[in-house]
Image (tube, rainbow, N blue to C red; front, side, top):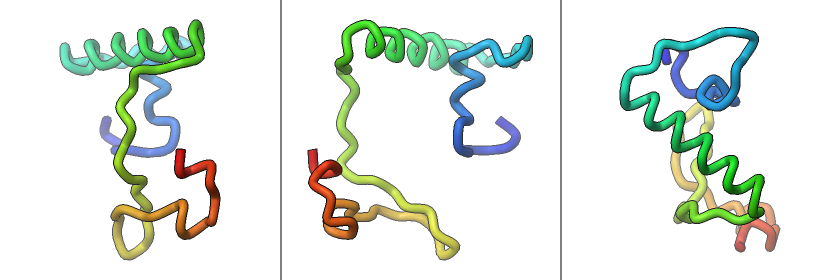
Amino acid sequence: MPMGAQHASELWSLFDLGGFSPEFTPGQQRLSERMIDQWAAFARTGSTDWPRFPYVEELTPRGSGPVDFVGRHHCAFWGG
């Protein structure tokens, strides 16, 4: 991924994007297949067996790191 991590950068692993076929390494191909299986299972059942992340990271001009969205935004939704 020469452009690095970015918003929606996973889409090329999940969908045919206008005939573009990236040349996956074997590891990237396995990851792509696992992502497709997980997304399809979620669409089919509405539930996942994905692990919960212990925190959310925030990217700022000063760098990145964990952020407490529940405390910062007073939003019970993020608290699970």
